[in-house]
Length: 437
Image 1: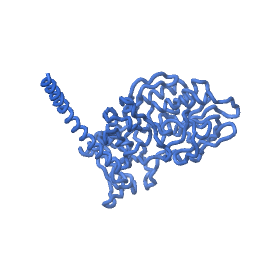
Image 2: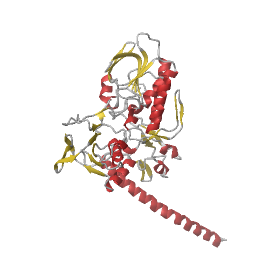
Image 3: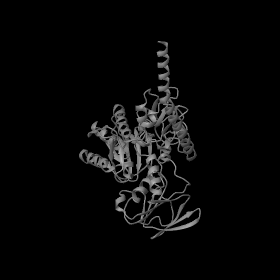
């Protein structure tokens, strides 16, 4: 009996070791890779997230790695010292799949400590700012994803409806700034509740989605849209999602005015005066759903007013057999360059002022490497546009001035960000926080 017991123990130990050793080796290899990746992202300033991201309770984490494997972006998380760690925070767009997958609920998705942030407004649970009656929703609140934008719009208008007082001195109950997903949802909910509202936008309806390349898949996740119903799919092609918005705007006859830019907002005793490029508007409440990209920034170089200079790519397939320069190094620039490089006969070059790309999404980084390695794309680092002519573009590089034959230029230099405007209005954010709400 003792012999059989000893044999059973030995057999059990052999089986455990047979499985345990490969597992330990595999996990050790993963950790080494995660450490190398973290070192790389830190050197590029990519380890921290810009908006919502996984916040990990290290004392509860058991290092199972399920969260790492569940991330749709591929390499946001890694295991270091047997614990889940944010490795490539700039790739995170807040899917929340890691939190859903964690068996011990050791992860929550949020903004974390914003006390040192100068781009995250201080808001309460209804998305109301430190200025009573002025709300900030969508991307501008620091929370990305269309699902969040829709939920923010509904929540803000619901709160307004419970607190709004009848006031005939103002033209509207609510002025909604921005016709992206958060602003349009606010308008739909306001109409549903019978509130008098107006949506204004400096551009066209769609917001950030308009800047996406053709056929780009947009993460939505199932969510209910007021007066429309359920958006049931996890992802929609850009064109299909824009068609839905256009259909809703038309069917519901939303009170929407485009080509009207916000210039400023002043408070008055019984509401707000909203200053726009087409005159002043008065309202009891204001919802800001501007997005974070702002107005496209121009470089101010000679020849930038030529018709061949663009600041967004609507449809890559309309450009064939062209010599194209893309100026910029963010995700928008890379996605545009890759899209253009796949069209027949295009010769595409990226000019970027820094020595490497920062904060690219994992999928874009991989697609860029493939495009460069196969010769579909050329990249000139440490370069700046000097002059644009009718048939050429002149670039300042480390090797001196370079002249490239050119048919079209796409400039992705960011935008005139809305944060100075928020500060001028009086909204607290980041280091401006003075009290807690």
